[in-house]
Image 1 (tube, rainbow, N blue to C red):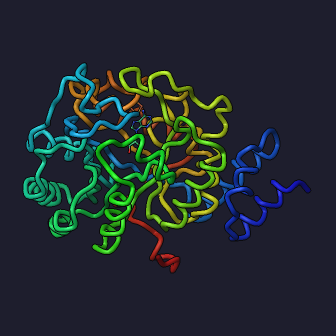
Image 2: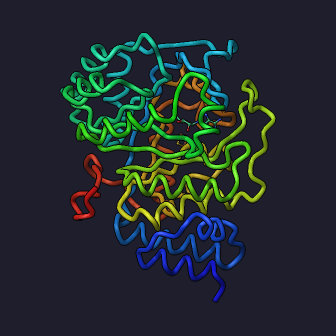
Image 3: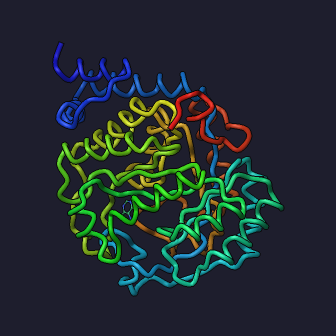
Length: 353
Ligand code: 5AD
Ligand code: FES
């Protein structure tokens, strides 16, 4: 048996490989790749069943004070027309999400300097009262007192990707932020009782297989409730415009499959960027470890203005179209929509943090 097969078998038996071993497995081709996908799919089925949880995402503001090198809504991109949805519009979108079968609403924005915790807290209280749904926030790095106020207002979960484990790469790509502060924020979230989601972009410019392996291992070490990762896609109006995708597309999927095998209980979404990579990308990830789908419920008129990367799907749709489409996709995979909020199962299964 080759070393890579052995590594996979040991992972399936619960052991954590080192970065060199994992990088060896990321190189897998042919039959071994199929085996990695099948193993991840089996682990997903064992721990999460066939239900796919729907988290409706509202991209409620594209205003951002940061200038991240990869991101289409970076403040330096003057081509973007900026918008902020009103509280009434956001609440109406959340009510739609509930009607369309979502158990969770995800409120995401750029790092909008005018978005204060007090206003956000009021919005969270309103959405809780009106819908009772689980609420996830994804509004960038915040101070501990802010996070405390938001938790108090009913926020259940928070998404903040660490993007890369390489401090040097993080620093180069984020002129306005530090790696340490992101990790501080993730630790605060955990301490405050949030369900914590994080992850990284797969295939950032200049990364090696061993760096991707390190990202997978770091995400695993964080013992996350949710792991969100997707391919890095070069946006034409950013400094990374000319950076290539990884030639071996299977690497993107193998990374997700390995995250699933190493984190059996974590919720893993089929992130939208996979559909930008190839038309049925999200369906493929759902068969290679993922158990969550995040339909876009942002009103149609704003969608074109929230393009972190090119070829984003569904920008010409209204939320109702995504709601119908997602049902078709899930039925086509012979799976069903998860009921209820789809909270973390890490603790419930005794797999404590
Ligand atoms: N390609 C892929 N993902 C991106 N994101 C931002 N820009 C890009 C891009 N060009 C991801 C980041 C961020 C999340 C909201 O979107 O990982 O955390
Ligand atoms: Fe938006 Fe399919 S999820 S149209």
